[in-house]
Length: 215
Image (cartoon, rainbow, N blue to C red; front, side):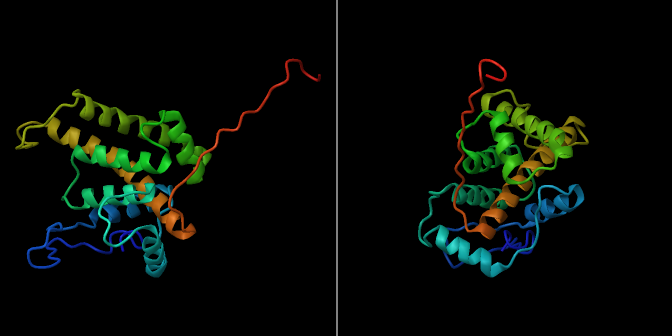
């Protein structure tokens, strides 16, 4: 439902069944924030789409009993589920969102310029927003790489900004970076649902250039 109308479904005290092995809760706030940010920034487009359309797409995308993702769309969806199972935004979200974005746009770890070009092309990036996307993805991947490879300033488990103002500064940096990539993933999945897609294929087309002008 949060793909159809982001933020409409939040289950802070979820109980699927007695002795269930499922998550204890799922939060819809991250989807709601993505929709609000999309409205404020104007790109990428996130909108309300029919629930029935999303359900039909999901039904053809995956088997009900399969709990491991196979297609790129499934991998991105499952990454969002892992994020939604926790309240707030943490550094681990950098890993989940990078995985989801790269699953859709041709991972693992395509060069950043290629990834950026694919995102811009599929989501119809306005020309005046190119610098925003470049800066945002670079900042996101700098944080993701630092967290993955040991360069991240790990906060204490207390994480009290009154004791250390750097805690709040770092938290805001993570939130802003994750907000952009989460919007890209949600918007792309909505486009998938509209067009009934499960993945994207990208082709590199070589174009020959004459050795001499006019010959």
